[in-house]
Image 1: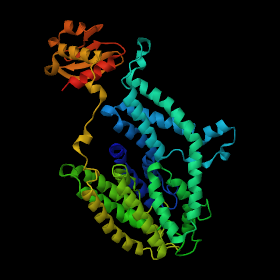
Image 2 (image 1 turned 90 degrees about the vertical axis):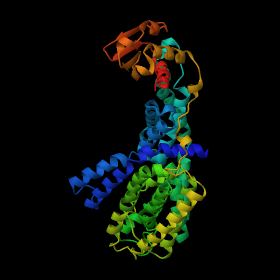
Image 3 (image 1 turned 45 degrees about the horizontal axis):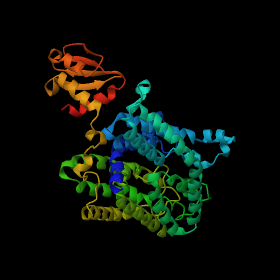
Image 4 (image 1 turned 180 degrees about the horizontal axis):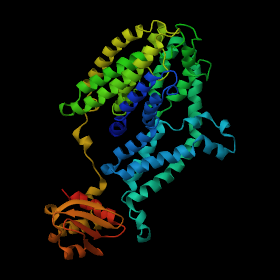
Length: 480
């Protein structure tokens, strides 16, 4: 189980790597126009929308990234299937579709379905797509249906499976979402302790995308708290309003960058440069804009223990800020930009004490993360076992007619000495060779292929049929 979680974490590295750039773009745009979010500045709007195009589509990036990373041979067909899986479930469970199914007005649909496009759904879609690829990408259908064999079958099977998954979520999702909202309303009566519990649960729910349900209770006017709205409007109680925001500043501006530094310092020497670029970009995004996903998703699946520690420390930070009535607020997230903008508002109460608290949490995060990583040999980015990087597949040890056919064709082409590259279209092997005159057409035709076509000194096509993909896959295993 742990190894599988680490594989998910490693698969997320590709989409996570693009998040810091998006966060910085949005931060710059927000800095240019903090009150209008682009309404008062065309330049700010352009930059903000550029960042939003990535940040707002994190679930899709996760669906594609996980499907690609968990599939055998990291195949693009799996990535496409991940996208298909996500589109099926989010379309079937969208507010408009549910309204159609229930025969009611969209405004009457359970609010839970308005939050179906979340990271959890993206992750589930990616996992299901990878399982379907690994299971069905080498299935051979009868000749009449051969075009849909192998990789082409995967998106079709995936879409069918996601219909079933959507049916399950149709009944389960509203209960989960509504339960979280009700729970949030309950803990809101517990003062500083409640703020700490909220901070802890907020982080625990981020991996499955349900933190939005909890946030809506405290940040907006679901239960009459409206912490963000009241803070910026100056209509709350000084030292109280902002208590569900303030404790995030020490974590996002100081704690997570320190965690990134610890992961960099404990990475293997050969991987330090790679880890440094990721953690530096993620740390800057967290400090400057308050976007934490680049760092959090770098270790939440690869090292769940560290993520639980992070959640606990977040809860403690929220409680401390609430106990001492240190308050600051945010319109976007708890980064430097919002801190500067909110610290001068009427509801701000000793906001600079949050920076002092942040410095303390920087030290705490660094010490705890570095100690646990080294003491427990936790596989954070840059510390993965080399065997984890190996790609294994069941078909590599199975002998079949396509492996035999591929070996004979490859030998007829001149083997390693002559074959440069291998590709295929719907029915043909498309090959690049050093010298087409060196191939043995009779040997290739003896395998039963319909024909061999020489299209140039360095290009040859072998007509195989609709099952060409399987021959091409076997040949690529031989080719060095």
